[in-house]
Image 1: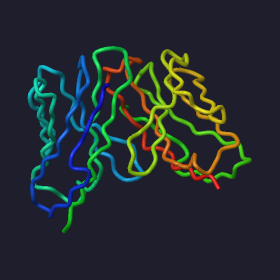
Image 2: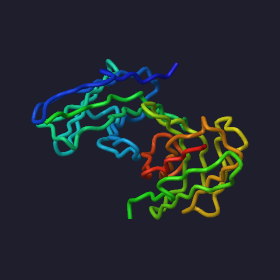
Image 3: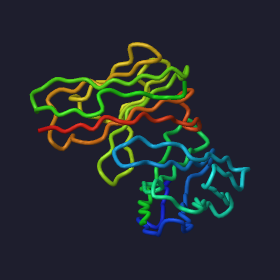
Length: 112
Length: 114
């Protein structure tokens, strides 16, 4: 069964600190993996998208990594800011015309 | 223009009301989606339109009726909803209906059913 699991479920860190969010998936075959940021009550906004041949991709202070062999991805946030408080959702696309599969997200809280 | 817009932002309706949610994109995308999202849960797919034809209906109750008047517009007609239908309704679009293509999400409509 195709699944996407994220950890931790929630995370609290101080402003200025770094953090890493995890995503494990069992989707096969695999097309791409995306990280979205979703502010409360708003739509998800894409941060990064990686295919199986890409190991890392950066978008400002956000860096995503992908290990297609172990089916794991991480999202590293550097020098966190209060505006980083949001849910971060890992989404995996199968290599078919199938629906995309959402993880349950990690809720990140940045404290001043 | 890389934006998906949704109106209204907020909607409060009674169980006997009829209302519509609207979604618009001008990216030339040929697939559009409706998702329902409850608090602290991931979005759940409801409908997919591909080239203006309904391609996926995830067994959604008939009180939700989608409509795609043209390739840029997507509506969701609501009638006789239940309080448990209160949620954030998200519209998304992608180049075509293949799952491998990136989906761009709108800001959502916060729906409250009284």
